[in-house]
Each structure stands twice: as C-alpha cells, then as structure tokens.
Image 1: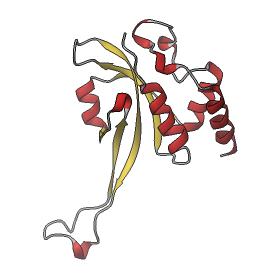
Image 2: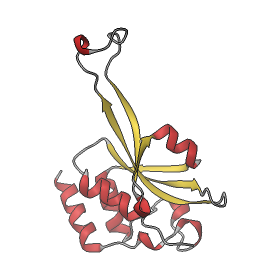
Image 3: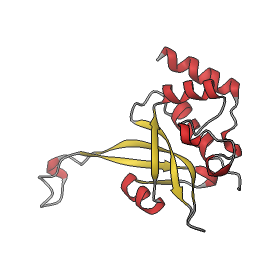
Length: 153
C-alpha cells in the first residue's frame, strides 16, 4: 500500500490549528479509491462554516427574505491536496463510510494513549491491510503537548 499522510495532516489541523474551535472535528472512515474501486482508511476534517449574508438593504432584489445559514464543510489536505468543499459532495464522491468524529481533546487523548494518529476505532486497529499506513506513527512529544493543552481548555 502506498504511504499517505492523511492521519497526521488531519490531526494537526484539528489539534494544533483549530483546537479552540468546537466546530472542527477530526474524522476517520473509509473511502473508495477512484483508481481501482477499493476501500481504504482515510482521515479528513469537518467543520461548520457560517454563511453570512450582507445586510438586507444591500442585497439584490428578491434576496431580502434569505437568512444567514451554516454549512457542513470538509477540509482534506492529505498528500498535498487542498480540498475544501461541502460535506455532502465529499461523501458522495468518495463513497464515505464507517465515519468516526473526534473533538480536538478526544483526538489528542487517543493519540497519546495509542501512540499513533489513527485510526482508533476497533475495526481499524490492525497493523496492516487497508486500515494502516505509515502516516499513523505518532510524534509522541507533539501529542503529549497537545493533550496537556487540551486538558487545560
């Protein structure tokens, strides 16, 4: 299996870049690989994005009745990509399944306890096969620091 960095990259986004924002979740699940149709473990980030409209008097005619809203979004920066799109599209294109979501504190604690970036749910704890890649090896010092910061929050 080719190496990937999805578990570490997604972990860093949630635990280090957005640890104080409760709208961000680290997600582990399976996706369908477009090259051969096989399922494999993957990690990405989900968050709630607010879509704020301009004041009513600044909207085009016919749009006065619309209200601010929120949208579930996905960030996937694995392997040099920079995808930021609505969750419903991401799930449809990737045939996403078996999803587990973690807060920054939960992710930091699980990383310290298991000594890897994931996946952490029981089906995924095998050390080979579709649930494992080398990106899951943990930098213990960084995880310990993240866990300590999460406990203070």
